Length: 79
Image 1 (tube, rainbow, N blue to C red):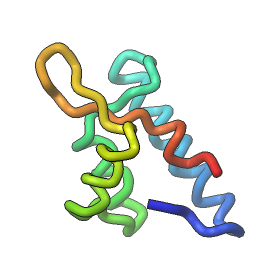
Image 2 (image 1 turned 180 degrees about the vertical axis):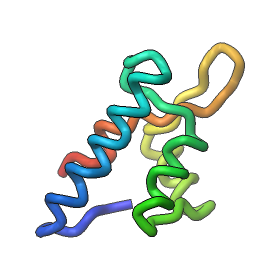
Image 3 (image 1 turned 90 degrees about the vertical axis):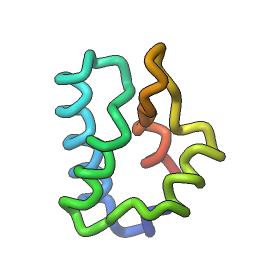
């Protein structure tokens, strides 16, 4: 998934939302995939299965010790 140039305010808002969620989930730079999907949907950017697979393929989705999918969100919003 790629955010277009000129959408800086949107990117900052998404990062802020993810950082706020990150605080709740341990402030380790990872948030559960369902939380990330909710944040993106709140901004009318739903995560489709193809987006989810792309995130996995690019290494942004990690598994915790319980095999829960966690998103390393910071790298997603970088150029």
